[in-house]
Length: 535
Image 1 (cartoon, rainbow, N blue to C red):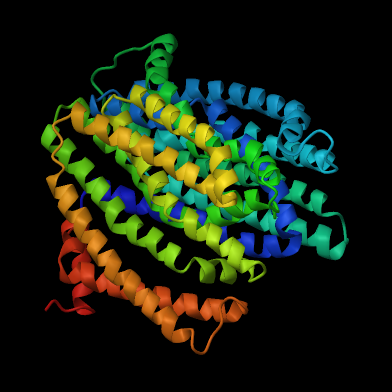
Image 2 (cartoon, one colour; image 1 turned 90 degrees about the vertical axis):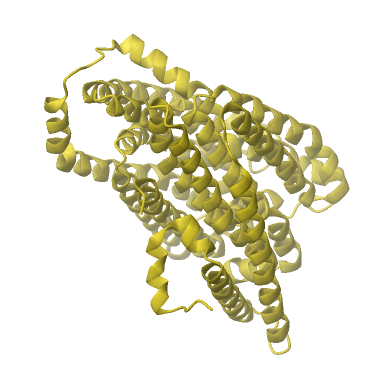
């Protein structure tokens, strides 16, 4: 198995587990605080996510590229100097971001829900509670980037999982004590739920420090064995770093920017059209978003593992290797994410009912069904942006993202007036899809990229996905004679389990029989020979 694929699988596994845990906790959390509580939670997290990316200045991903580049040139000292200087910089920007969010919390809340809202004080408090995480997350992220630049994905994967576990445990315990034991107010419980991000960040820092102590002797030996250093000053290092990182300040906040447009317009536009709001913002951008992030995570893990290897191939002008890696990366996205988002769309009502209950399921499940396909575009945007970063075309990512956001801004209010809350989803899908198309165009014109193999295998994936979807629909139809997933959470779980299980097995068997699985993922899939036999 290739090194890029090993790194991809490790980082994807860690990221996937982290996101899966991040989805699972929403079930008891939503049960304890309701959709009004999750709406309050969402209001705080969107501006937090944006400031988190701004405070890190796109540096963690850029550090991965920077360290990978100089390691490939045999200069390990420059990467170590960057880590030290970057930690100082990220600590400063983290403090500044904390101060900005903490003291602007009331204004952000007013822009979101209105100055005269009776929820203004609660929203302000929740935003202030989450702001403390900005003190620790930026310096932690740059350490992950340093390890990834060494093509060491375990520190990132493990620290992500530990961070998520500690955050979720603190969140659920504190919410349970406040709501169930002390019979306290929901807004206070939500405030402690957002503060859990700070506690999780501390746990991640401890894990990364342990890895640093463990890996330091090996890193020191690399340093001693090097024969030449470029001797860059801090000024030279940061100039090069920000040349990489600058455009990706915006890329890192792509999803939160789309959500921010909804945060400031969705409730107002729905009410202006005479429809019920029904906490649509959190249903789409928190509860449903958690579900679609499971397939999207596959793309996120891939993009992080992809960047160092692409950077090295591009730096050494190994164009055949570069072409192969980009092809492999995009084919993995097609192989894994297309069936995942299609499957989630087909079982949207059952999935939402299983995780969040069957109350207003016809409305909420329909929003998830529309939102699921957007996950494919979100994943493709992340991966194509990382490819642009690897081939030194990162400036174009600003153009593609700007185009997508402008489309979202221009269409959002109008589409919400036409289609209700679904209009916001359609506007997001159009914006992200446009950005992805622009990124693909830039990649194809910047390098001699052969897309015939990608096109053929993606077409095969689509055909096999259609067969899988038909199987899932058939299982749902049969079970529908004895179960009603729209009325019973248990029925929804049973239908979800058997339909997705059958669909997944059929898709696995089809990709194995057509040798698609082996051609994309390599010889390691032959472990399935003992379970499956080719016709």
